[in-house]
Length: 259
Ligand SMILES: C[S@@+](CC[C@H](N)C(=O)[O-])C[C@H]1O[C@@H](n2cnc3c(N)ncnc32)[C@H](O)[C@@H]1O
Image (tube, rainbow, N blue to C red; front, side):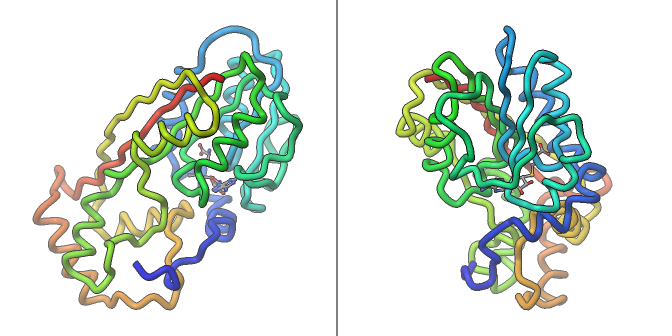
C-alpha cells in the first residue's frame, strides 16, 4: 500500500479508540493474561508497561506483584487519560523509542501487543534494554507476520490495494525480533509463537472491529470502493469460512529476555 494512504502515527487512532478499547479488546486481554503468566516469579519493585493502552494489564501486574511501583507509558493521549483512572503510580505520555527514564531502573518491563506498531523496533528494544535492571526481565508480546493473512489475501486479490493491508502494522517475524533483541544487547532470549483464530461475521465486521479498537490507520480519503470490498468479502467467505462466519488468524510472538 502506498504510504501516502496511511497515517504514520497511531496516536490519533488509538486516542480515538481509548474509551471503547477495553470493551472490545478481549483478544488483547487473552494475550496479556498469557504474557503475565510467563513473567518469572520473585519480588518486583519497579515495573514499566510500555504501550500500556488503558492500563488494564499494568493494574493486573500490580495485583500479581503487590510490592511493585507501577509506571505505564503510551504515545496516545487518549489512552494515557484512560490509564490515569487506574491504580498505576506513574502514567506518562511517551514513546517506546525514547523512554523517559534513567538507565537500569526497572526490574520488570512488560509490553503487550505494541511492537508491531513501533516505527523502529531495534531502537525501541535498545531503549527497553537501557531501562532494564541488570537482573531484570523484559516480557512482551506482539503480532507477527501471519496475522490477518486471510484479510490481506482477500483485499489484494480483489482491490487495487497493493499489499492487501487496510492497517499498517509491521509484519514482524521471529527472526527479525530475535535479531533486534540481540542487537539491543539481550543475551538470554526465549521466543514463542502461537496462532489464534477468531471468528467474525464477515470482512466488514472485521474491518469495523479493527477501526473501533484503533488498529486501522487508513486515511479517510483512501478509495477502495464498495464494489471491490464486496468482492473481497465474497472471496473471504469462500476461501476462509469458519462456522457461521469467517476466520481471522492472529500470530502472536511472546518474548522473555534478560541482559
Ligand atoms: C493494541 S494496543 C495494546 C494496549 C495494551 N498494551 C493492551 O494490552 O491492551 C497498542 C498500544 O500501543 C501504543 N503504541 C503504539 N506505538 C507506540 C509507541 N511507539 N510508543 C508508545 N506506545 C505506542 C498505542 O497507543 C496503543 O495504546
